[in-house]
Length: 201
Ligand SMILES: Nc1nc2c(c(=O)[nH]1)N[C@H]1C(S)=C(S)[C@@H](COP(=O)(O)O)O[C@H]1N2
Ligand SMILES: [Mo]
Image (cartoon, rainbow, N blue to C red; front, side, top):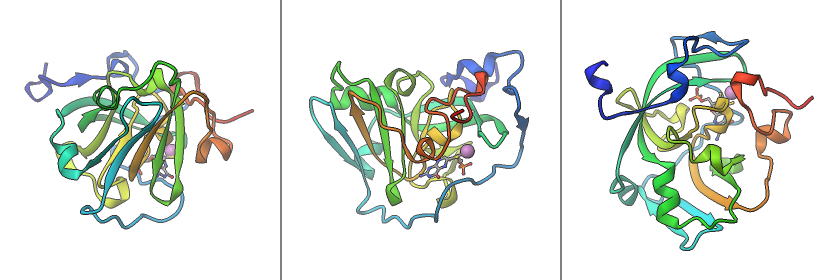
């Protein structure tokens, strides 16, 4: 294995003989895709909230987030508009660590990511807790720029990239599902790229 990949979590999907899901093509340049404008965020007042069905609601400022154990993940990224970007190394804090920190209760079955400008996206907790899932502040050793979600985005490599919420502000643990922004606008509620869960029929 490549030296730079040692001590890294490797997303299972990167081990497939064919890494481009059906109906996708590979892009080398990183596209920018989102609804609305890029929010202006003041890092001094920024916080990540872990809330809902948790033993202990947690609110981490930037320094507190940085003090958590860091993780690096090697993963691919697939957008429903058909581009796939391979070979990304994301750095941040694992979603499993965040869930442990807040003490997620056993009746939590879904996670709703809350972002700047009121954007939300939802997913089953099992997908959220995948070993390749994290909140990320950098890709390939470059800090995220504002277009890509600075200061922090979610990264859920096994689902279409609209679940990888940019400008993340909160993670809510819930007993019932709550379709988010794109999910209410025609995108599939789950979004598995390998079975082409693209849109509601
Ligand atoms: N807050 C927010 N996050 C978002 C979106 C959005 O509209 N708002 N769009 C999603 C979609 S559709 C994709 S494909 C990815 C794109 O991430 P990128 O612009 O860094 O490539 O961000 C996702 N995260
Ligand atoms: Mo997307």
